Length: 166
Image 1 (cartoon, rainbow, N blue to C red):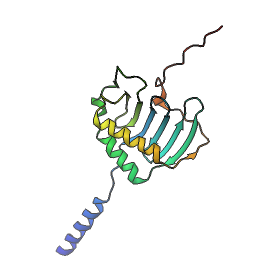
Image 2 (cartoon, rainbow, N blue to C red; image 1 turned 180 degrees about the vertical axis):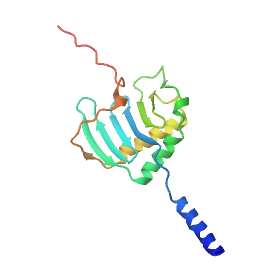
Image 3 (spheres, rainbow, N blue to C red; image 1 turned 90 degrees about the vertical axis):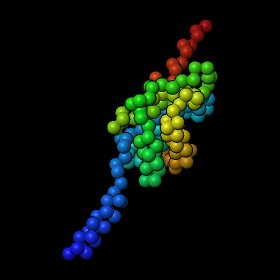
Image 4 (cartoon, helix red, strand yellow; image 1 turned 120 degrees about the vertical axis):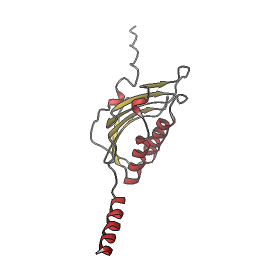
């Protein structure tokens, strides 16, 4: 009887070790601009579904899928960020044509943060965005016959100046 109890305890412990915790965000909604040539928006869900929009004028949509390892890494970076303690914006006032991004989260820490430049950005937020940039560069995407609106695009790009009439 004692051996059976020990065996059950070991099996239970081993099984509990393999249970993965749920992803801590419902979705991440990110818009990024390099300051000049590269612009994209991306939504990543807690199941690893990715929808990406490239371009500003002529918008093209793509879809892809993160594997479990990529999704877990993204979640581990996201989980370290105390969004509730962060400012809503980090801006390098003296910069010109700097990279910028806006992250909108939904889930346990539903919030948003805007970044222009890199000098004032908290390291955890910088690490998250660097990982997302790696996803954008490396993920296999397929064209998507869909149109998606991104909350992170709202008020991200300045309005176009009015046209002059002759």
